[in-house]
Each structure stands twice: as structure tokens, then as C-alpha cells.
Length: 387
Image 1: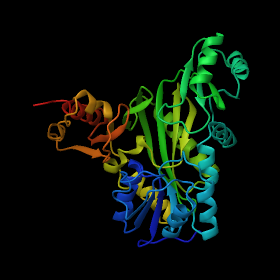
Image 2: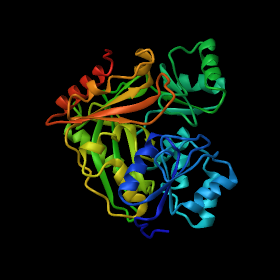
Image 3: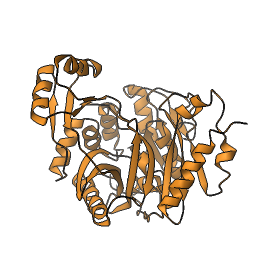
Image 4: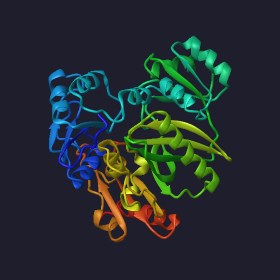
């Protein structure tokens, strides 16, 4: 199970989105074939560039078995899926799953995630797990207002979260109704100075490599910009963040890539959440590092030596579907954006445009992070120009 899988083998990717697409590009560059299990959608961003797209549900026995039979190693671009069937069939067939089922199940349930982080020695915000309005009242009394109430499972990009600022009965019942009467995690609001993330890879032999610290800005709970190195985080805090992320990936015994999102509060760190896969905040590594987060992930899961991950100053800005909507159906001005020869435009091949949907991103590297961000933001602004 721990033998290296050399070029010519097939990497099976669960999920057909943009992360699967970028993983496929890197796998092909290293000489691997790629099979993608989409969850049911056809002609997905990942499936378009894979060698085989298995457009079937994650609980389709025959399709999942076909996907397993195609794969020499299985990995994830999206953790919010039911993993039982795939993990069981992979185990029966002797196909390694990296990261493991236990890591994925911890990451997709906020309660399990918090307990795993605490076991790893990571600092987390005070929280309570609740299932009823009465328990929510008790949690609010314990934690104090305001709090963030989150659906326990399958939340991402701010989905399934409500800020609760008043404890009156109508507000509490409204939160329970909005979040679907499911198990909930209630968490204190952290007054952070900066949001950061560390993407760190770990190989089958325990080797680790990281890309430094990314500083992130979210708008409407969706990542808007990332810069590296961080502009507002002291070096000693950045070093502590790298050490903390590395300790977590080792504690989880994870093989592959882990993103650890954190809040910076003065000289202290609070871990917000983890993602056991490449992450939005690591996109700038494609241009900024000798080995990108996608290259590290493929190397790690296939048992190859990890590459050099250190980054030169870089920035990433997200392109959401709102941009297309603002242009009333017209295409953004791609030539205008790329008039700066140092700007890199990455589009995900998504046909349906929706507000808040991630359609692509822009990156730029420069001698300073401030200049890189300025140029990337300017390129995004130029996309709105119409003739």
C-alpha cells in the first residue's frame, strides 16, 4: 500500500470541480493518467481534462467500482461527499486512498474536526455542539453574544452559517429553521487581526513541505484575495503558523495536501478549519513556487519526493460569477486584463454563471507583495471594461 506509484499509473480524483481540473493538469505533466468521479454531473471542469470521466453518483455501486478499478491511487478535490462505499470498495481492491477515509470524515463534520484539532494540540475558538433550540439557548448563554451558528456537515464558502446577535426566541428559532433543523456547531466570534492559511504537504514516508503563510481577505464569506508572504503578520507569528499546520498534518497522519485556516489575534493563533486537499488560498503557488500545491499533492499521494514549495511574492484575486452578471451577459475584457504581461488568468471551464460561483482567478508575482496585489487587482478591474 505504501509503494510509490510511478508515472503511467492512474490517479483517481473524487470530484470534478476546478481543483480536480488543476490536479489533472499537474498529474498529466508528470505522466499520469487521470480518472474523475464527478458525483453525477457530466462534462465537468475536471472531467474535461481527465482521461476518463465517471459521471455517476457517489453511491452508485457499479460506477464507483469502475472508478476504483481504473485507479492506482484515489484522492479528493472535494471532501463533502459520502465516503463509505468508495472507501470500502477501494479497501477490498487494495487501492490506497489518500488522504484517508478517517481524515475526510473528520474534515466534513465540524464537531469531529474540532475534536481532532484539540487532540492535535491546536487552539480553537470556544464552541458547543447543539441539536435543538433549547440547546442553542444554553450555548448562547455559555458563550455570550454574538455567535456564529454553523451547520455541522457539508458547509463551505460560508454556506450553512448564520450570525446570531440576539437571543430572543424568534431569532433562535429562525436560525434553527434556516439551517434545516440539523446538528449545529455554535462558536464564539473571534475578533481577529488577520485571516491566514498554511498549505502543507506530507508524503507516504512522513516528509513534509509547505508554501509559507498566505494572508486572505474574504468578501461575503468567499475568499476574494490572497497574498504571500503576509503583509500584516509578524514573522514570529507566521513561523508559529507553519509549525502548527505541520504538527496538525503529522497528528492526522495525512498523506497529501492539508490547508489549515487560522485567525491571527495579536501574537496568538486560532485554527478555524482544515481542508484535506489543495485550497483556493494556495492558487498563487502555480506561478510563485517551483512546485505548486497541486504538484505537491500529486507527488505526495504517489509516493514521490516532495518539491521546493517556497514562494516569491505573489497575489491571487478571485473571479466570481458576479463579474459576468455585472456585464449583463457580455464576456469580460480578457485582452485588457492580460495587457500586463505578468498577469496570469486561470479559468475553470464552467458554463453556468451564478453570483458567488468561482469561475476563475488571476495571479501575479513581483518583487514585493504590495506590487503583486496592486497589479492583480488592476487586472481584475480592467475585466469590467466594455467597448
